[in-house]
Length: 308
Image (cartoon, rainbow, N blue to C red; front, side, top):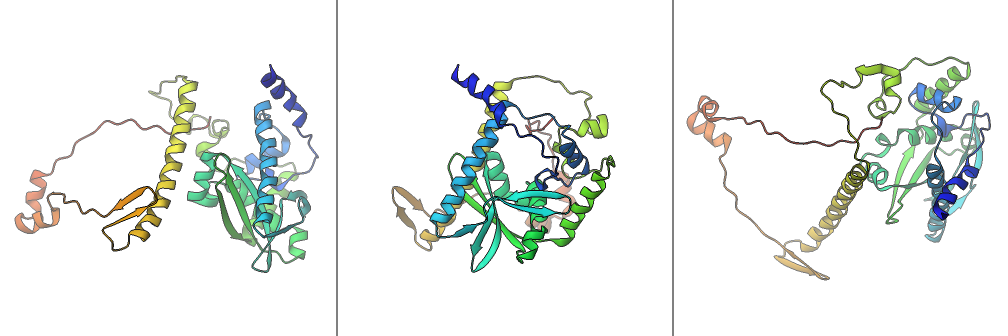
């Protein structure tokens, strides 16, 4: 009863269009920018609106954490203008006596892990947004040409930051794209890195993107979510273990064993046998290798996530 009422009440969080195009709606894909501007994309559900609203609270908490750590943060929600666009930055942060753009992102496990591993490659929309902000009249006037993405994993509160600098060529290219769209020009679909996971790709490219021949369609929603959650935690767990192993290796040094709290770190040197291809060729010749070389086909199952 309470949960249903809260989801229904989330409709009050839906923002009305201001009529202005914000940098947060601009994409490296002109078609996506056009749909964001025209509001032709499927509207957010009540649950999604709650999730976005929760992000706003967490981002404020992230700013509080930075201030508690001794950083000076100012100009919270400062309005900036870039050509026909306008938006609001999270703030400016003073780092090593230099003011930088600050953008806070509370991320799910999947986004957080991907962002740590691949940076802007996994979050191209954030890159576009930040580069446009740095090109704004207000930040250019203050001479601000770099910034930080401060990310936090929602569940564990583990922080991560990525420093970036202004790329004038990239931001100007994005501005030109916006000007062409505001001229009521419907963009022609252009293949880019986003196509493989875009939910609108079939509309742009038709069946050529996905070959459905021999494909069986099924639905197991509970198990699908279970697989996604387990896969993301497995990836994140591997990252945590590797981070700890680096520190343990440093503590072990040249010692045969070291106790770290309630963990025993032991140096082991296992012996494994095998045939060296190089030595085999040296002794019997390359022709002999081809006579004993054997290839086997192994059937495996590979699961990948797609957006439709």
